[in-house]
Image 1 (cartoon, one colour):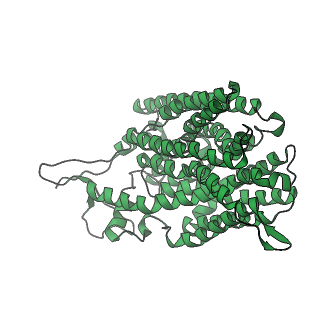
Image 2 (cartoon, helix red, strand yellow):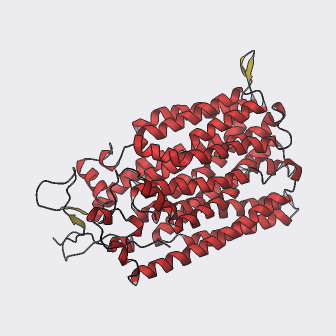
Length: 511
């Protein structure tokens, strides 16, 4: 049986070291290990491609649905304020002028300051209990929002919602990277982030149904219409959060749904020569290294621009559709199809992007749809044509979030740097959410020329950044091919070389 020891080529190609012998099984790895999972014998641990595929499929059946559902609830509890607004909340709480913009803005302002510290806490506490804790937290806040009676009360509730939701997106992204290889990431991240568009579709349907529940509650606090939306969506979230720890594995070596050999394969398939320890603690130099990664700046700024559109559309689409002259119910229901289409396309883009191991070209291509959509909304006056523009926008913008986030995490090795990078990119991207809350103001209704112009410019910026990211990654890989980064190994110990991560001369950026 032929075996091959993993070498630096894994960095360069993102693939697997493998070989074939006539009449023999294909072996992916044969390596000597010294950790707690390794055999005490001198024999190397080997497995077949079929075994690894089976392990990956078992991971997919638990990790992907779980993370997708948790993020769906996260985005549902975040965006339901837009649904509640047109179901009477705006009138009941007197959200006149820019008050609604402040309600949505305070969430993102708090959110920004929570993300990086939250991911550091995630590394310390572990995702099995920390992520469900956050889910229960934002579910409780959402449920309590049903009892607010003033603008100030809603503002406070949204601030607390930002505290709990701030760590969810980067936390789930890092959690996924602990189970999958670089070239497997985008599809999984794409599926869970597509829950944002799924939440938009589901949110419209759910809001329509919940708003029709007859008034109930004590005489001093009647729950009705928009209050039902907050109460029941929050209650569902809390129940899911309480049950999540029973299904969420701590790490590949502790997956309850794998047998002993499968757990060992799940761990060892992620081991790359000169990679960092998945259990390494976050140190100051990891934070510094994350901030010195040029690719992170490109992805963070791209995520910022994408978020202006994604968050803005998620919050204001019901209002934009209602201002076309439609009833509240029609606006809620007609917000569903664009999100459904966006969800399907986002997953398809992630799938094909992983297949060809490219990120930038898909980001550049699909932002052309977003540019087209905002051009239609900016200059067209026909309601039906403007509604068509909404489809172009969701199809073009929603694949961008997982694209930029995965691109950053693909090119941020090892684990501690990856954890900080994920939170950093999402933090900068969230600032786009803050801007998004001010792009559509009541004084600009019903055409919203300013908001559509800002988003149009943002989509053009995404196109430029995507092409710039491709150019930079190709250039940096060329420098490494020419040996111009080899000096980074001089005078370093084996541990220091292993800690280099993406700065290792053998590491190759995904374009």
